[in-house]
Picture 1: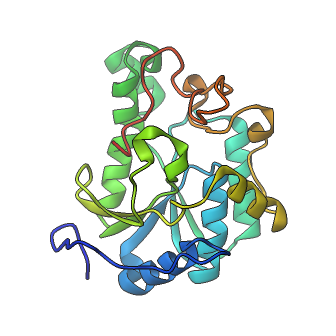
Picture 2: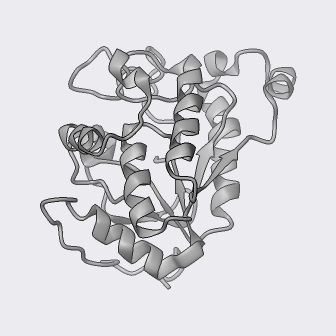
Length: 233
């Protein structure tokens, strides 16, 4: 089994077909190779909806983990409920942080996302994901090369030094148009905030409509000099 400790380059080679741009081939290999030792950490944004649908074709009872920070938009939670209805066989886990919002405020001050957003992400996203990945050899992510400068060199299979795991990114060759074309063609449920100017959706306190059409993540942590929560670098 290919693990963080046994990592070799290149990890694997996949045909990039016209229909799925390699995504389905990557997923078939991933679930065949790792079995129940792989987990999909899903934010249930539009890329996540595509991946959930593709995963359901390969592994109908796959485990999908949502990092439930307790401060997501109500539309996000409603979207997850709709996804659960559409894919009842999937094991969708709502992973919460160790600290409640009240405990976090008592320990670190109120509205930590404003005073120290990196610390807030560490408590409410990074630590829960680290706990999740400690039980798996690999994880799936919806990163696309087109999303941002920090993601343009992502490979299908990556050695993840942050979490000492193998990170698999099936959608690296998909464009924003590819994602939406797939969602509409297959009539998939998705977060209605995408129709209101939110191409990238995270926690409600740290997400605003995008102000730059060329940067799909420009609405995240606006004005704070921060572009990533830390899950991907």
